[in-house]
Amino acid sequence: LAKTTQPISMDSYEGQEVNITCSHNNIATNDYITWYQQFPSQGPRFIIQGYKTKVTNEVASLFIPADRKSSTLSLPRVSLSDTAVYYCLVGSGTYKYIFGTGTRLKVLA
Amino acid sequence: DAGITQSPRHKVTETGTPVTLRCHQTENHRYMYWYRQDPGHGLRLIHYSYGVKDTDKGEVSDGYSVSRSKTEDFLLTLESATSSQTSVYFCAISESIARENNEQFFGPGTRLTVL
Image (cartoon, rainbow over all chains, first blue to last red; front, side):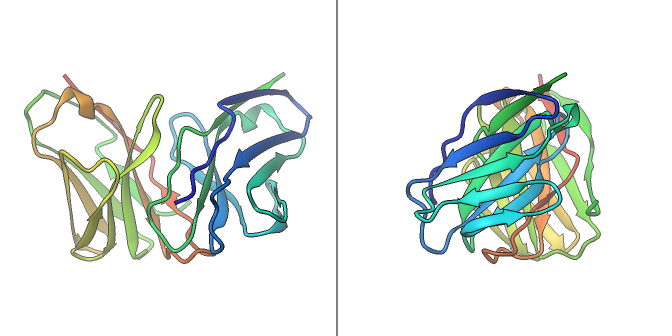
């Protein structure tokens, strides 16, 4: 499984766009990149998944460069309710995903 | 929200006692997982099930056993609880592990304290 590296924490203000970058230098050809969000006292929740280029849904965008050695989760115009821990996972056809410690995002008023 | 319940939601027990945590799903998903979450370690996979009576170990399986006698239930047992097993335990389910369709749905968690 490819190892991922993300910042431990980030602060942002309401209304700003937040970009969280994940490094995965050893990503394999078949690996997908998946992001989860976890609020305090809750289990993680799937946000977005992608393989290459750009993926967008109602919650976030995921940017993946051509070499796929990193990916960026973009949250547009964050609000206080986006304060959470965000996990980047990389893998394919396996149940053994490594969640790691994630990035703790704090949105300030 | 996916139909996943965990019981109990909170439990305090003493070192050396057996503990069983239950995960129940109403989604008929094939795959079920038990994770533990501790400060500084994130989420770590304990055990996994890929069908009735089919289970496998995760990265932190020592001291834990699991059973899955029905599709909807996945039990995690601590045979003899230790203080190092104090943690928040999450159950998760997924319909598939295919690379493009492997979303995991998590339960509300069980907070276990071993004194």
